[in-house]
Image (tube, rainbow, N blue to C red; front, side, top):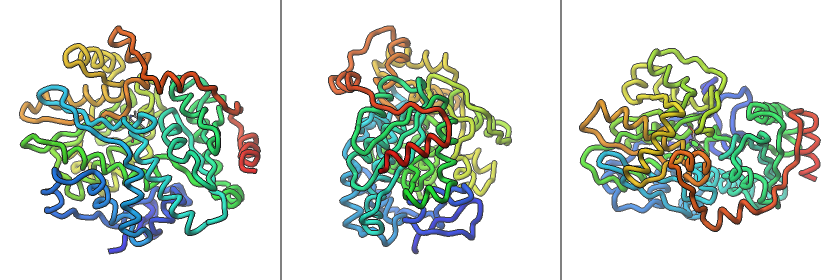
Length: 437
Ligand SMILES: *Cc1c(COP(=O)(O)O)cnc(C)c1O
């Protein structure tokens, strides 16, 4: 069956894979959703421990990309995307960490960004061989670096990153501002919401869209979303315990968790999911009360999860056909304070000699809460960022200095290059046209 994607706001509006990827979202701002959910063969699930990650990825993604990309092309493209490992490490008797931070920017977003960039390149080679593609991205820290790396040196493609001045970590800022070449950083004198507002306005600007072939690379792009299913299946392929795991996902925009739930709907064996949140507790409150009430974001130690209005929540509700009871049956949620996050980093380092970054620490604390009520269960935390990326918080928590690896020391010495801008639409588009000359 050919896969199409419908607009969640209007189920009659269907597009194919290529259009869904290039557009990012429907004209009315609606998110795309697959027209059917593939059901995995029992034989595939049974053989997981014998498959490598490339075979796993190709099997999962084949039905989603449909005919426009041949089996061989998909295989080659995924080989290039999956240039790093996702090892499952045991922390104690009941808890394992799936380390998703061995990619080029040390963040789990590398996988989705790399898949998106390779898919776009494949589409553009067929559809726009001579034309330019402009990729716009607003970032609160990790997305921008992953996108910059994934698109660096890609032919006919210009990347423009907007980030809030003074509000990203030193390593993150260097990752955004030192690639050069086709990657440009706009340092916005405002907050993340200002960056996002400018990008959204650009996508509503028809004339701008057409002159520059704008594409958004934020987490609502279908290519980024579906690729993240790979993590969960690769986790299961390394899982040696008798019963399926509880999986705890540090959540902000809920793309990653939704990918796990999509995999579960296709047949991934799992016990339960945990939406691990920081003080931005919109989803935790929903699980507890049945009421979904977006809020302004508050700043925390796990800043990539500081989201008060998670954009992928609509996909999650769609997966369960808006049935609160079904959501509750499969997902629990806990909101973890900064103090608890910090204490968790301290404790896990002291007891198990394992370093958690603040995002992974939120997932760990949430999983512990769940397991304390279910003594027979074991679980996996998704480790979404390398602890070195959040040096200050981690050093504070463990009371020791961390020696950075050579590559990161080198990165910190590179010279930052950004264009400082007021959060003003006119100057923003003036800069787009300058950068795309
Ligand atoms: C983006 C990010 C998250 C949140 O992922 P979502 O898919 O937005 O829920 C968690 N941890 C880290 C380190 C991130 O960069």
